[in-house]
Length: 216
Image (cartoon, rainbow, N blue to C red; front, side, top):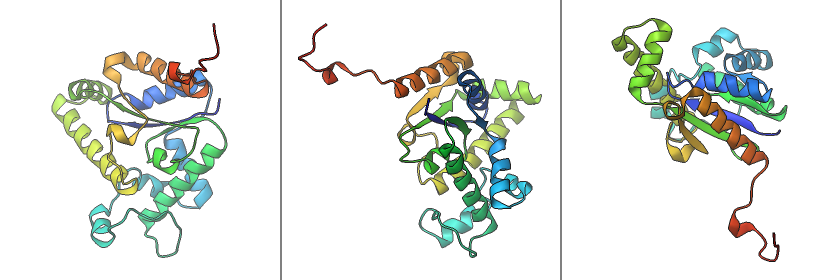
């Protein structure tokens, strides 16, 4: 197996749990908060600093006002702490991908690995009412508070992704596949991703790709 799976997700869609299950069933590494630990080791930045900027561009409005282009992927002493944190994460994602197949959650990983032939980028979504129910149960919140948390988290993730990746977060054109986890259930979503991996690893030719001179 060579496939590297990146998973973007709406808050409360079960995307992280799906990623954990896929990694476990495929016996490959899983990276969520673990990615920050690796980035801290490689960059020398404090893990707490990386956590404070994790999928949340603190100075987004200032950055947009002073830079009309997406953040360049280059180092330099002039970079803000926010940019250094992003660079450390970006570099770590590429380093991890070089080590072999894995599952990476969020953090513009699909953008960091753009052009990698082994990349399978997925976005997991679900209807808002289902996400409210899941978050309310998981965090013992009222539906109103769960909804507010979902909207706040999704806005933050969208701002981070759209600024650094310069693509639309959650848009079908930004990923290889978008999957509604409520339609299939979490177990069904895991099976769907496994099927996608199998197809990527062992593609089946379509009828138009079959040599017409071959019979049987």
